[in-house]
Image (cartoon, rainbow, N blue to C red):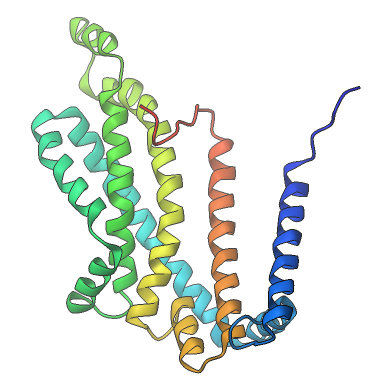
Amino acid sequence: MVKKKLPGYILTILSTAVLLCIWKVFALILKAEIILPPPETVLLQMIRLFGTYSFWQSVGATLFRGLFGFFLSAAAGLLTGVAAGMSRPLYLLLKPLLSVIKTTPVMSIVIIALIWFTAGSVPVFTAFLVAYPVIAGNVMEGIRNVDKNLIKMAEVFRVPRKRVLSQLYLPSTLPYFAAGASTSLGLTWKVIIAGEVLAQPLRGLGTGLIQAKQYLETAEVFAWTVCAIILSAGTEGLFNFLLDRIPWKRRDPNAG
């Protein structure tokens, strides 16, 4: 007898349903909406938010900051990663810098950014610094893992540098770049929201979240959080869908 596997979306629906049931049970046990509101109360708050113009302004502001910070880090990571991967002195110079940025606490970056920039720019700067090392590091490794025999062959036959870059280095590096970009996109939304919570720009999901907390509107805090999750999951899903349509073998960013 052949066993049929359940489709992925069915498993997702089932796991979500189980999570909602657990949430509802705990809400009934606690009987304190200020601590844990039930799912239906949060849903009503979300519907209320969806009907306000300021909510969509906040979504647009967060979406713009996230995408701007992400594309900025992707462009910088690709350019500097390629340059450092092809130049050993630049690689030795950039490698420790990336390590320092990676190990710096996100909250430290946000607080420093608060001193340097306006409230609206803080989340973008923070997202850039968090995402950039991931992408640049991946691209550097992709360049350095290009088959050395092919490089030597290109040198022997005096293949133009531009052609070597476009037909040898770039195809080998793109899977690394894609993996790094996919990983950093998920980080970007977490950092953007955290930056908005601390900087409190005029509009943003993080701003709405912290304002709801200040008024002890726990259901609204949950509603803003669910909206942030939907935004993050939606953009990541779309990005990965587009990557899967590109004919290259995607590589795990943690792979050697």
